[in-house]
Image (tube, rainbow, N blue to C red; front, side, top):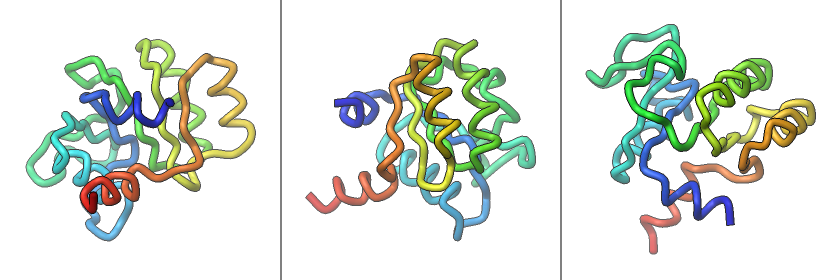
Length: 130
């Protein structure tokens, strides 16, 4: 199953990471780090979150990203798909609210392995409780 495949990958990028601790862009980024994932924040509006470097785009990340977790509006998600394809990234996890039919259709057309009916934050919290 795609979800298990994604959770077994160790290098993640959170597109839409933010220093605002109330927002999902922060909570997801932090939770992935807490679970031992090598996690890169992507957001052109910030240089650092909690003293960790944040990148303007996926191309700047110094390592090959295995999974992208999107925490941005559908319009931005659509733009990220092209960049992800260029970089040869296979897995994209769409958080609720980050996609519409057009975005999902394009992701499928480009051949990504995708998940869009689940939340990585809820999934990781569930794992903690087991």
